[in-house]
Image (tube, rainbow, N blue to C red; front, side, top):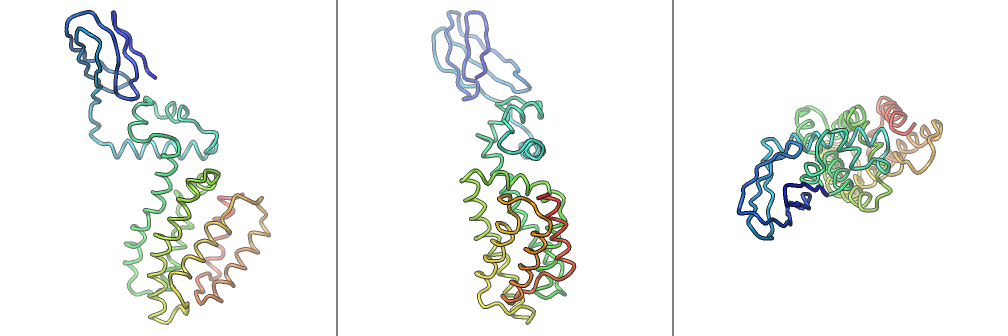
Length: 266
């Protein structure tokens, strides 16, 4: 809670944007600045409630992205659980009020980072549409290759795994995998079935199964990193997907998986 003092005046509760105070003088207007945030206070001659009006941020989306970028960096360096809101405040040079204006808690920040990860599906749709000469299987391979080589994803995924200790975030990740991501994968499997490159029986079920295996079995913080075990898992996944009629993993993609897993798990 921020407390600002004026003569005969105590102003409380800046975080909630409401101030309670006592003042014995006539009505006065105060305009002051608190860490780059503008507050206009109307102070009457008796005790009453005052609203704090923050100056509008002309580019709120830039502020949000800056908070997310700095938070991601700190989560990667210190771990999600060990990073505090105060750490984020100090790194940004903003007031807590500025951060709380966009995010109510650290959980909201990690949730927004997760949503960014899954919202990239729209970008993948646009990316895939540029490969009109490819069949469904080839498009799936291109998506996996792009994802595995994406530097932001490599930075984000260890943070996401660290946050799995939060049940709320785990449920969100499962929901996004089983719904949005799987639905997108199913459209490409359907395309592959039509052009003959894929022989899966149920596109949505097949998409859900391989995404669950990749996101929560192959890429997992729940067991110690062992290079040979990781190689065995990738080989097993490759054979399993071939049996499912979706032979996505070829030699090149298998190597991409191993490089990615070493980067995020080792």
